[in-house]
Length: 202
Image (cartoon, rainbow, N blue to C red; front, side):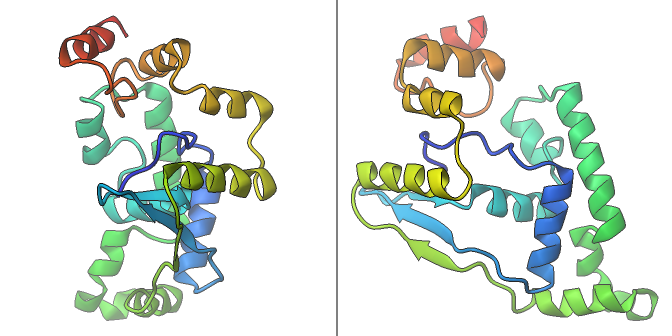
């Protein structure tokens, strides 16, 4: 499962928003469907719902940008700002919800857990994310993303320009620099030699 390059970075939600969403999921609140699209090469792309999926995966893996998955992805280059944001999120989750591993160990210590946590643990066994499938080619999937995000949670004019110009040299260079040449390879269309040079310079 992948995120298309026409999407913005999955970093719009703060600790409170992430915590509120996980709580809503555990309490069986109404959650909008995640929209997926399958490419002709059989890859699955998340057209809408990246923040929702990322929040749940972060909770399940105890990785809010500073865990093992993130460290491996960014070759250990985690900024102090990101570490602080992850620490804040983890602390809030611990206080209001509890870590995912706490729910996994409930069966061995049922008498020591508060009723709300027990109820949420029971819910976990039957909870699911509703999926909706996008039809059409890659262009149709991209158009759908922009329509969805202009209506519900509008993308700013500047952000829209940056996303639409994502293939231009300045945008590729900017993304490389911001991530210090790590993370998603927005420059993957170049040769291996050029990619290495971009990452080194960045």
